[in-house]
Amino acid sequence: MPFCRHGHGGLCCRLYVCAYLSNPITQGGQYCACIRSGYKKSHEPEEHSQHNIMVLTMDDDLVYLCSALVVSVLAIAAVQLLKPRPRLPPGPLNLPVIGSAHRLVNALPHRTMRELAGVYGPLMYLRVGHVPVVVVTSKEVAREILKTHDAIFATRPKLMSGDIVAYGSTDLLFCPTPGDYFRKLRKLCVQEILSNDRIRSFQDVREDEVRSLVEDIRAAGPSAPLDLSRKIYKLTNGIVSRAAFGMKSSKAEDFVAAIKHSFVYSTGFSIPDLFPGFTGILSFLTGMRRNLEGVRDTIDGILEEIIDEREKILKSGRSTASEKNLVEVLLGLIGNEDFGFPITRSTVKAVVLDIFAGGTETSGTSMEWAMSELMMNPKVMRKLQGEIREAFRGKEFISETDLRASGSCIKYLGLVIKETFRLHPPAPILVPRESTEACEINGYVIPAKTRVIINSWAIMRDPQYWEDAEEFRPERFEGSRMDFHGGCFEYTPFGSGKRMCPGFNYGMASMELTLVQLLHSFDWSLPEGVDRLDMTETVSLSLTRKTHLMLRAVPHAPPPSS
Image (cartoon, rainbow, N blue to C red; front, side, top):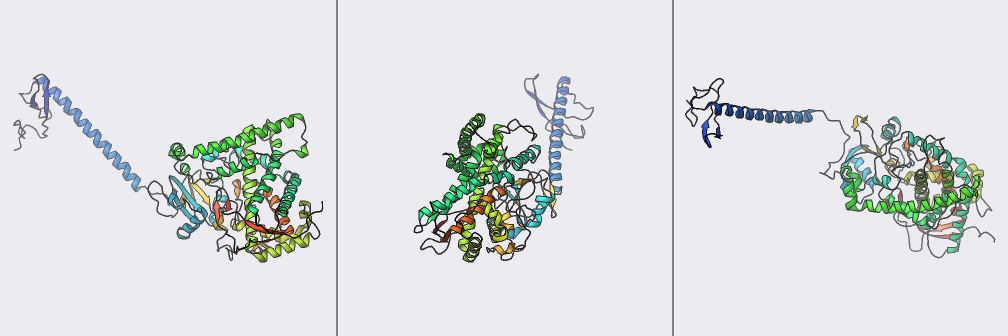
């Protein structure tokens, strides 16, 4: 028979609870409390027994409470473990904390993603830092994202560069949601800034700047190689500055340099953007916030100065409707309620920022790649030059009016431009989107708040859709209905759907005129001692050459008479 230390046997109680309790009344003496329903040992003082029972009851409640809590936690954990998880697309193993970020650091993302897609398929899941990412590398899945479920995937992820530089993401590029504001802003841009009539109104500006480029190249002479990259960017800066501001600003070069600097942080792969919960501290530690704020201050200071000057011109009545530049057009809309939202000074600056970003970086880059591919493919160069020189025989300078009148006489030019955009799209991976809700595609679930990347570059080089996909062969577009409007999902150099670039025609006008004039006026060759061009890429917001394009230009047509 079991006994406790105080000799209370098992006959006393069926439940043995032996506690050594301090007895305040008996100056710390210890006694045993053996409790059974309705039982109290005679040697225990009455008041002590009541106190001890109360303490033991409280201890029991605490044990029961803790036990219930533990059981509840275990039950919840079991439910979570047993709960069927959404079937995510396949992807590589993610490392703790950084996920797959190490695969994209110091790499060309579009090429790295194509290599991974070769292993895991055209719909691939990555975790980059703390951000879930889905990468699309097939036209079939691209159609699902850009057309079938466009409403779910039309949102932009929140990026620091958009918040700081793009006036709180109030521009078209970074505007987070395709809601009422986005639709009305896009309508404003399409009707007032990017319409065919508005683009044509700057014909004289483009022709004047291209003429200056030709004269500049002639003046350099044929003996020494010239930096065609630098001259093309000078051209595009001049065109956009005059179209936007009505003049070549002395600070335009600083303005464009600041925009290009911001592109480095606009890909969505900067460290602070990959760890949303720690963006503040990481942007401070990496210096990203300080750099972006410096870029913003430069851009905003130049825009404020130019806007002030154009406001004075508008108030003085010295500007006519036919001569208005884009800033004046936008300033004239401040307070206008026709578009259904308040047009403010910040709206004006955000739109001008987009115009410069697209009109300088992407237009100049595309011209560079076109000339690079023509140098790499002499047969294509000779065929295009022959077409141009035959169509404009006897002309020293070709105008846009001449281009429109030539019609099908320079059909090959359009094919060359299309093929250039296929191999070298301005944005190799379309600007990231973000899902607003869970969506099932190809049997896989893409959760809400997942960043979605369309690898347009990989799709446009996929041998499944393109014969001899890596070759520069403009003839592939002969008889094809493919255009730049995003209806064919194997060819989306400017995107598709709600987020498609609305201003590609703006850059196309400059590109056509410039290429025609350069190929009409000069015979081009590589510098002495150079056998092959370096075609290495680098990426900011657009896909650019890593090295400048250095060429020799020998005048073909005589210089214009004075």
